[in-house]
Structure formats: C-alpha cells, structure tokens
Length: 265
Image (spheres, rainbow, N blue to C red):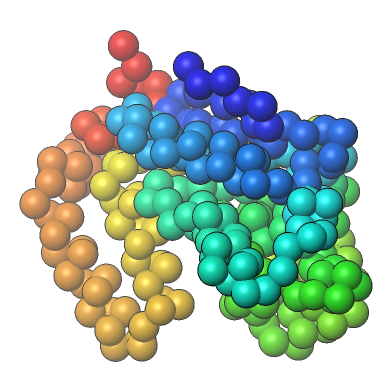
C-alpha cells in the first residue's frame, strides 16, 4: 500500500474513496496533492474490482484553492515551459465515473477540481467560487471553460469577474451540482450512489461517460453517430445479453463486469 501524505484512500463495495487530507491548509491544492490524487486514481482505474470513484474533502472545506505560497515566486516563461497545472488536468481524463462530494469551501482550484469530476453532490453548507481575479490572475485549471459549460456565460462571467461565492441552493438551481444534501448525510448519500453505479456493467457505464462527454467536443450529428456506433458495439458483450435476459425474465441482472457486492470473493 502506498504511503500518502496529503490524501486518504479507502475501498468498499466496488467504490474507491479519495479524501483530501491537508486539514491545516483547508485542503489547498499543492503539487504533491495533485500528484497523489493522480496516483490514487491510477490505482483505482487499474483495479478491476472498482466501478466508481469518489473525491471528497472535510466538512469545512472540499478544497479552498490552490496553494498560493507555492506559486508566489513562479514566473513566465518558466511556468509555460513547465506547463504548470497540466498534471491537474489528468484528473479529468479518467475513464471510470468520478463523483465529487463537496462540503464547505470549493474555491479557486478546489472549485476547478470539483468541476473535473463527472458530477458534483454537495452539502447544504457548500460555497463555490473562482476568486482568482482578486489575486491579480485568472483560473488556470479549467475554471473559465468548465464553469461556463456547466452554468452558462452570464453567471460564469459574473463569478469570475467579481469573485463572488455561490451557495448550495444556487449551485443546484444553475446545474452546477446534481443534488444537495444535509451536510451530515452527504458522504453516505454519495457512496450509496457510487455503489449503485458500481453494480452496473462497467463497460456500459464507461461508454455512457464517454458518450456524454462527447457532447462537449463535437457537433450534434457527430455525437449522435458516435453514440449509435458505441451502442452497436455493446451488443458484442455478455453484459447486454445478461441485462436484457434478466429484464425479460423479471430478475435482477448479474453483470460479469459489474463491481461491488455481487461479486466480492
């Protein structure tokens, strides 16, 4: 087992749970934290028993931003030559579903980290914001792109230009988060959803993620063609046979590629 200094990793019922663990820095994203998140995600992606992944912080802060002390003395063109922050984007390129469970502050890089996940569940105390403009810079881990795609131009522009924070209720109304829960229920509800996903066919689940993400990359005609082709390909696998047979037989499906409690040995 790897020794982590900035995260905790747990696995249960086909779900991998990564907890950001820099409590004294409100889980601020430093280079080591990004590296360790990626190492943990690498492990979970390779593990055939894992069907869904969850990323969470503490009750007070999911992640309150990037580590400013670490960036204070960086300068251009070195930061450009190093492609600073490119490692963070690897988090967004995972193939298995990744859910963010956000309680408390998700600001700056913390908000961007949540946006890299496939969807966000948040607690009723959550606060989202991209306050980079107050530091004389702008978001650099996808904030201007993913926030705009998630909630539209008007609110994204306003939030980035004013540094204002958005509460849980507004986050749900705007479609930034999928659901809001009381803070004490957030993690249990998120894990319950993740376990439900892990019980499904891993092939189908990964194809759904790939197909939905395609909607942001290509034209509608190309996206529809992609979805149809990938739909055709799923008929080559055992999970489609089992899923449809179980439906006709009025029994629960037992997917061979499903993770979670059905197949734990």
